Length: 423
Image 1 (cartoon, rainbow, N blue to C red):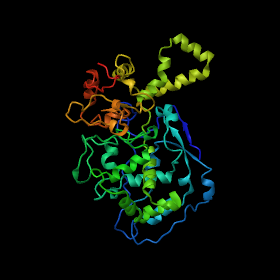
Image 2 (cartoon, helix red, strand yellow):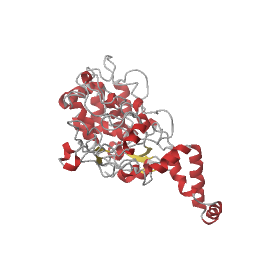
Image 3 (cartoon, rainbow, N blue to C red):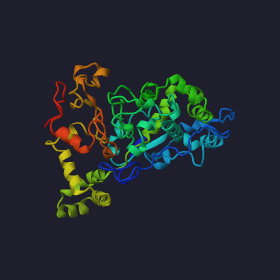
Image 4 (tube, rainbow, N blue to C red):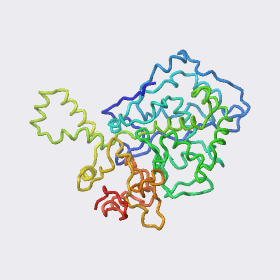
């Protein structure tokens, strides 16, 4: 099947929360499922005695034609992650009614919002794991479900919480029995533009990342086999997996595919920065030049007027503009690593963070076994960065001011320090 991607410019689509590189001040609408597959009720979709067997897709369109159709959607639209409508625990009838709507199974033609639109060619994974509304919804349910963990206390959202910037404000991730590793919880948005996952890139794909924590003894502490058994024993899940994935049903790979699809639907919308970038080429033009543009190229002038109006509606402060100019300057050089639509180069760098201890975390080296990768960690996006403190792979920097100061001093000296780090 073909990969369906195109881009959109010129509007603020209001997807997540938008500070620094964002357009709203409050977190937005990817919320925990108020209506989940809860246990206890005989009418609940998780009632173990249910014998209801929904057909694959029983709407007016034949199943065979669905793969040849597509539905255009702005990635990050709230309706993609709103859940199945209604109140109380989901019932088998409600899940079945959702699954019988053929539009929920159409491959989505992804429209990237302004800002991320420049990264269209970087979109990862959807050619092999098509996005549909049904798969996003299944992944959403799993993302917030603590039953994936060994003791029913930890979900994906426990370390990647929408209310905490899709990360956690703790220095390290906290797993079952309060266990902690030595790394900060990375964000789980804009993953559609990212390849290998985790700070060290040990997961080759978002699908592999999604199932890794399930079997990690200090995260969810479960086994893949037990997680599959648990999910398969919940009728509401069983019917969704059967309809979405066919005869394969519930497998650990399909659990990963569903969660990854939900995570790809979580993106940041256009920021004041993005609106400013759209109008910035025109700002150096003199009034006479703009008048000439109006006469000679009406389309370009209309583009200028549209960009100007959007930037005025979503203004950057004077201080932010000064910061933007420094950020992109040779003197400061932030763009040595923070580049592209997602403001991250998808590479690994030793910044000296944590290298002063006797036995430092060697990061990417443990995966690649390359000497130059010792102490190197993946560059994170800085979109919505104000929402996901603390910072760095070890959560050692509590504020953005501390991060800037670390770079300003030239990082922490060590023999593998990146040549991109300069005072």
